[in-house]
Length: 464
Ligand code: SF4
View 1: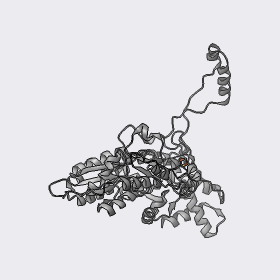
View 2 (view 1 turned 60 degrees about the horizontal axis):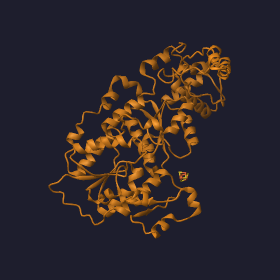
View 3 (view 1 turned 90 degrees about the vertical axis):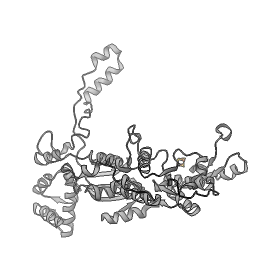
View 4 (view 1 turned 120 degrees about the vertical axis):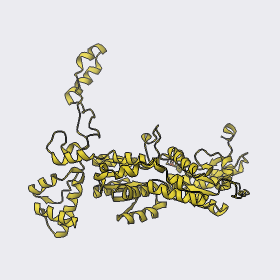
């Protein structure tokens, strides 16, 4: 590789299988006397995961390559300089977040010394010590390196992650303070439409929507704050898979009044979502699948993500434009105000029947082929092309209902017919919660059967 690519540095490490063989590739590369620095990695594949591997790799790169003899120029007569740490290849919206961060730094008159690791060469890394401070955009990747830089070059770090309007404002204030700049022009940026959008009467129906949030710690915590403080949602579940950052998630969960869920077991996440009966799930690609199974609306807020979350268009999560993107993305999967109203009022309607769900989600998918038509199509495919056109039946493609409402039948309780009918009057997106609350109330009261009266008693009990 060195002979062919002539790199400025090389990283040497082992995969999980190679770790079992214990070949010591780091030691071997050192003994080879390579013409460039060889950075040996110790990544315990059986204990740690991707983000930890990226953070450790970045830290080792910085530690090995940073030129420690750099002495920062005096601040007088020049603009403040910052390193942006954390953006990577395969990062969730990192490309577009960087555009927004550059905009903010420009308006504060802050010069970017280096963005790393995304786009940085080993040679660039050598001058990492020349910056006055660091901006840790993605703590999962950049935190470890930033702490070493703090010790080695006395570079303070901005640790507020600017996802959401409030967090972006705090970020601007924090950067301005370290840069000795005036935050007013950046704070006066009027490109943020999210506050007006969420204050407008159209968004009233979003108030207290129950939302379940799961992802990496940074995005999950940011989402919880936006949900609580900027959109008026009620966070009914919060968790992350990043054990290294569980403390931040625990603190935010305490603010939301929910039990934190720290796990990398997607089945545990599925159970927690089903138990919480949210009206919206904000999660990773995995939660998107879970929400689909449970018939719940969902938006993706964090890696792991599929190809559709590396969009062609500009779609940041950070900064004021990121807040605009977040507002649209999260509200999109929900049933809109008028339709929600119609679903509640005309539940016998052929179009607005509640099992049809939101009209904009999968309402126009083709109906699966009927069995006989399918058999004919198969038969036709085996004949010659000419005969095929005559044999194949016209297969009707019709609209099918959108995903059905979340499963709500728990089966442990006997509901009277009357109570069951009354329960069905509750809109589908909160019916699961109503059923669970009533059953929890019945358990607490020692009741074996749920009558209409129990349903209303439970409602009054939880409304207190
Ligand atoms: S499981 Fe992970 S460490 Fe092992 S080979 Fe696959 S990607 Fe590499």
